[in-house]
Length: 435
Ligand code: FAD
Ligand code: PYC
Image (cartoon, rainbow, N blue to C red; front, side, top):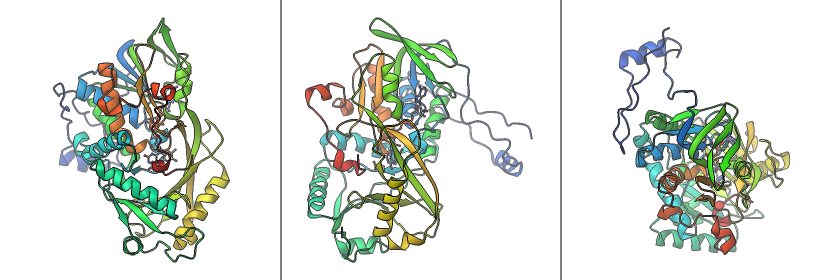
């Protein structure tokens, strides 16, 4: 079957999304009958140009969102996203898709809440279904200490006008009947912190939606192209060496998650970030069982059910540092034991797949979103185990930082100076993932 004509590019005005062509009913029917052979590509695969105003290193959700908002909010369109593998093949396509804004510190609450609000309108903004499902996020408490921490966080969130509520045992029983509340466990459930607006979104769709939107604005997305060096003249960067040759750049923005430090090393910048594997696994599909996302920091597992019915699970990081995208068996054994302790009904479930991503962790479990002392060089990383939920918000404020050469009010506290100035933003408890 012949390829259908691709959609027209770039109809839009500065600051507005261009209109993307839609398939007609006839085209849809013809394509569906033709074994899905005639769909056009959602973004181009251009040859790299010799020079761009901005080169973004990393085609995960954050890099693509940055490119999208650079074009949409700042009318900067001579932009390339350089990805060494395929779009979303890093942490974006490997995470457990949890979205929430239940953080303790004011600056985190503001940043993650902005992101949650963007998630709430993202499918409409991108004209692409990112399958955001605000089904509720429940953080279980197993000790009096955890209850106190949750109550403190609940109040802090409310002071920041973010929805949050404490749930009693009766409430938990009504919400999640399969949760074992018998009290006979080593760590019995004592209560929970609920954010009803939290939930999950389809991770690949977030990357694909931003890619399609950025491409429609004229951003070049270049896959299978690894950045192997960053060229610098004096105190400023001038471009990137890649496996497809040198690409000049007015500004270089690194958004490479687990590889943040290897890229920063290329310009001689040392960062207080460590890379570790984080694993997840998924079960065979079963009938609806978990109506919301459940996280337990103490017994330690977090679970949700995919639209297909699979139970998606994860737990803490592997403690060794590594760039290999695989983890160790004891961590998986631990998370399965934790899942069965909380939900005995899961003990007969078969697991289908496990995988890992490499997460980049800062000492305070908060990210870096900043310009650096090297002119034209910007870093967005250190999101550790929790950056998926921040994808739109991160791209939004990073685009502002790159375009204006100064932080947005929401990322003003996320600079490198916080490590030397003792101004850490400690979010280890709210991270909900042991590290
Ligand atoms: P990535 O998607 O990793 O993108 C970075 C890209 O940079 C990669 O595609 C990589 O190939 C590319 N790259 C690296 N080096 C180079 C180079 N030299 N040249 C060119 N390209 C390069 N967060 C949540 O909020 N909720 C969750 O439920 C959650 N669960 C998680 C579960 C697991 C198992 C893992 C691993 C992570 C989880 N996270 C979660 C964290 C979240 O996935 C990440 O913080 C987030 O996806 C980071 O997005 P990113 O776009 O910065 O990174
Ligand atoms: O940050 O919500 C999160 C998360 C859940 C699982 C991994 N990270």
